[in-house]
Length: 513
Image 1: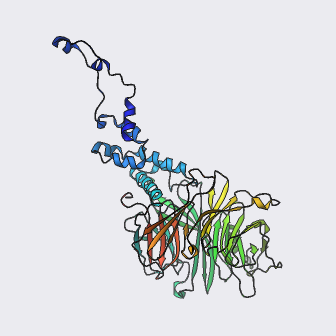
Image 2 (image 1 turned 120 degrees about the vertical axis):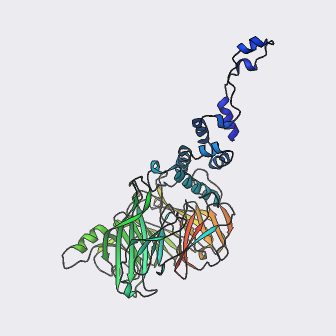
Image 3 (image 1 turned 135 degrees about the vertical axis):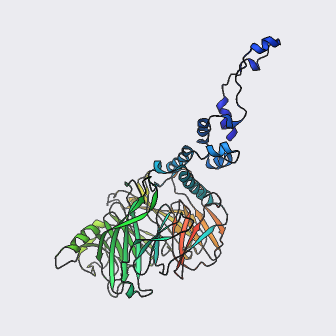
């Protein structure tokens, strides 16, 4: 492929007298003839601009092969334009919009190459059977209570029992922790297994640099808090990312009740509360900016307003989605339901009470037999079809949920959402703690990691679903929750001991520097 690309440069070349048949000439005549310039027989004799132009038409594997030929081609293969072109092509092929953490023009050639190779090698690794490798990161003396892998796979946020949030740069060879948010709970009152922290992220897609709102939900016997922080990428004078910094936007109390799931989107923050004695379950939705303003007021009554969706079954997971809607999964019975926020009641009561025994009316509902208890993915915005998509699983199948980005006509409930089976899997999938991306999932047992690969109906390059079993080198698979970034091929989990983070990297070894 490489030689055919280079030989195309010489199409139409006129060799002139040197290749034409003619009568023999004398020595004098021979000295008077100016022979035409011959095409170079060594690629390195071509101008660097031409070599670069040709390499922009090669795939990443061919570029890596070319650079092994000689020093000249090696140096040319590091040209910034080549890797920027490859990265832009990757971005254009993506079904789900991918946003870099800073403008592409601020990336160096080496940074572009590293990022393009990680993405490309991860794409190949999903279907390969190569052994995966691990980075075992020992934490400080604080226990790992919860964590969130920021989209892009570089930044890992970790929460401990005192409400301290640390930031970890997974691109560094030696992973170190830095405090992003200081302690929010009194560490002297720390009780093991009594503190609960949930996190969610809402990206600012219009920001030039990586920016997102971080929602936190704390609960302990003595306190329960909701917080929103603005987190931004710190950059140096050359636009290189140095770390993350956080600014508190809101912090206000919530009722001292158990919560099971939490979601943040735009101006709304929501949390799900299971059955409390004789009080039925519900989901509360709060306008966090208004709640903060009301809580900071000098009024004696600081109870802020919230919207409440009353449920008839205990919720497992919730997700706010565009269009002021909420999707809820239930374990018993196994339902997925969609609610409109405008159907919710408004109250200031700390324990909302519903007068309707059937709960708040849902806009759409689907029954999935044996739905996994905690397998609802984050929402993926599919701009080409104007839909929001989520993934969940049952005991032997993976399903996709497709919801229009706009709010359909309520008189036509069939168009609210649809469920499609993405692939059939092995029995017992619901017991394997899957981590879902848009086209790939990771599950694991005591000795292996299994990658599940699936496509969505109507997407280009549709491929039949596949399963790839990878041997792992890590044996202790007892774990809490996991989190995965599909594009970088990184998954994070914490063993039950809770004092270390294990980073799984499925990118092909040797290709990612």
